[in-house]
Amino acid sequence: MRYVVANDSRSAVALLGEGGDCRVLAGGTDLLVQMKLNGAAPDVVVDIKNIPGISSVNEENGGFRIGAAVSGAIMGEHAALKSMWPGVVEAVELIGSTQVQGRATMAGNLCNGSPAADSVPAQLAAQAVARIEGPQGQRDLPVSALLKAPGQTNLGKAEFISSIFLPARAARSGDAYLRFIPRTEMDIAVVGASVSLSLDESGVVIDAHVALGAVAPTALLVPDAAASLIGTKLDEAALAACAAACSAVCSPIDDRRGTIEFRTKVAGVMATRAAKIAYTRAGGTL
Amino acid sequence: MSKIHVSTQVNGDAVEFLCDPEETLLDVLRDRLNLTGVKEGCGTGDCGACSVTLDGRLVCSCLVLGAEVEGSAVETVEGVATEDALHPIQRHLLEKAALQCGICTPGIIVAAKALLAQNSAPTEKEVRYWLAGNLCRCTGYDKIIRAVLSAAAEMRGESV
Image (tube, rainbow over all chains, first blue to last red; front, side):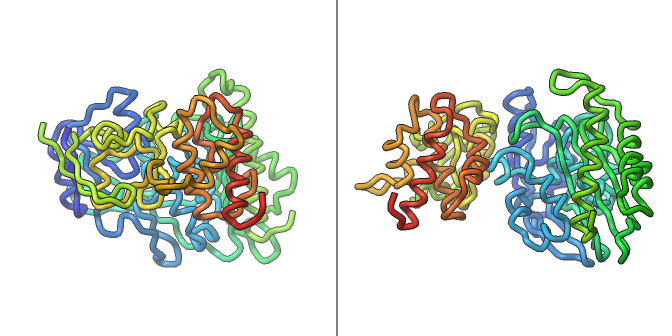
């Protein structure tokens, strides 16, 4: 194995295009585990942490651009980011232990391709956009377009994510992420749900995005669930319709941590609870 | 395979070492720098026995490559006590019998010290969540949590 520090995106792309098994190293909390446990034996590991700007959170067009090497701990300490996108930050902060938070990144959580990744439903509900560097230069792609299958993304050959953009928020907006796990900390989501809402001055939902994790081969947006919330103040009928729409799109695995029936039902429960938190954070009164 | 030359700082001292590209910081600390206070438990970031700080940030040294610490500052359990006195966290762990086999203890000391550096008065809940990534199979955790809380109180100048 070769370990190479890339000092700019262009050289990182060149290294990733050299052929053989090339891996991107940012936080390393998935890559090093794969190398230890799952027999991953990369030919080249490209450390992207030295690329200018990749380790910082920057305001941009009223939103935030989060570099691909920004750790969960840094996101959690960023007051302005947390205030604008509390659901995204709380989702990222649920990944692993304090130690893992010191290294793990939101972009890495996305690229690892786990259907149960905590931050991915939150990124979907936030309409996050990934900035991708590749042989043809730079392109921006919605996070939703990157999800492919367990352990896979739609990133092309020699491409890597350099940052993730969380857009500006309308007034009276809020988001929230909740997951079900059998214990209270350090576990993988059995179900994850994220909701992002915007309200009008009277508290009526005018924009909504609902996303689920761990109930299908990839995290997924649930437009029908979002539609059931729009035009309401989260009355019981709206929440019931949201839950039903969430359960309807579930095609989960069946294991001892959660049966198909359990995950399908709990997806709706988590989504409605997250919707209520997002609504309150947006300034609404339930 | 050519080795990588790394210049870094460990417990305040400038250190240079050669390592293989795939070698973890944990292996470098233990096998090249003889800092065997750092323990290998799982080797996959689940148990926290290999906790160190990297530029002040708590990390699992098994999830960091040795080559990644070029130009950084690493702190291990060996740097916690002074020449003639244990750190209050160490003393309270001893006084409260908060260890048995001791494998998890160095990681817990480093992790607890990192917590108290950023939060001098954590609640019991905050200590429990902070240390959730440090597994201990002997004590049942309660004595560890109480030792950290009383060390924090002493460090704040309160009588304990």
